Image 1 (cartoon, rainbow, N blue to C red):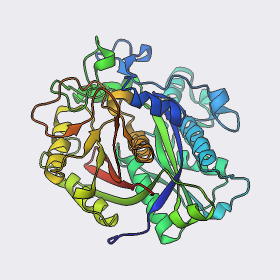
Image 2 (cartoon, helix red, strand yellow):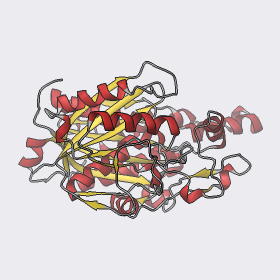
Image 3 (cartoon, rainbow, N blue to C red):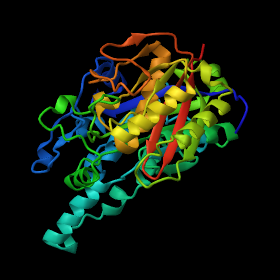
Length: 410
């Protein structure tokens, strides 16, 4: 899609992250630049036993509808975040026209925690001990399916899987559904809960994780000279999207307008970023084109910023090349860790909050910036600034690139 469209309003935000359960708890956490990484007893014995866990979360309290045991943790997080987002948007599933409500949720891993636990049960106790809920607990489409059931949403219900870009991809797809007239409301985002010894081992074998195990609070350090990998995290981010005219008609001021979306592929390597960053550049240009914007209009970028040597270098090189006017840059993974498939949705929510509140959170742990990286990284404390247009970057294994453009609604 080219040319400027009227934009899609972000009218509700729900978050479950290592920074806290709820939108405001997470916002305060990243605003403080406080790392959530810690040694994880469930990873004990591994070379890397660090994680960023969701801690102040009670499934009996936070999962709507009761019976939280029937869901994998990632689905629990999504249900909680979706309930918060819909309430924040001042919408009521009991009264809305469910045929006009879409649900688009992404995940990189799906319900692998439940799958692995039931596999262990199968091996130890036999087929008769396996839960009949195994399939609905782990199938990757079930996160969007379960949310649609709870919200009585009978419009398009879709799931996206583009690795760590899954959440941003879901928001882009939801935006396209709204612009096409396929729905009036879209509940979109992503969830993952894959902190497990097997997956941690897999990432470690790829040299993707930080091995700063004696300094967990400072292990994730995006764009730092001595960065050495990410810290696995978990959580969910859900946004309610509506066409801007509909939000105005019901007098719901938006946080921001999701004005543009661009996606692309590196077509380079299964897991390594293309050092030329041409794929990232293509997604960026497409996002700006669909927002009817030029590069020099961008005031702020919420970077993917994984804290990996190659990934941060490629992203920073693109930011310096595409935006020589040096917009402010933040990266939430220093505080929250890498939330895998949920990362793009959570970071998009944080970008919308930055636009609404004209405030950029700092990059946690960026005490010694890489001298080879030329970006205006926000460090130490939050920065108040005018943000008219902001980008949120998300990239994933397989070469997936997704860039979202948010405008101030004023």
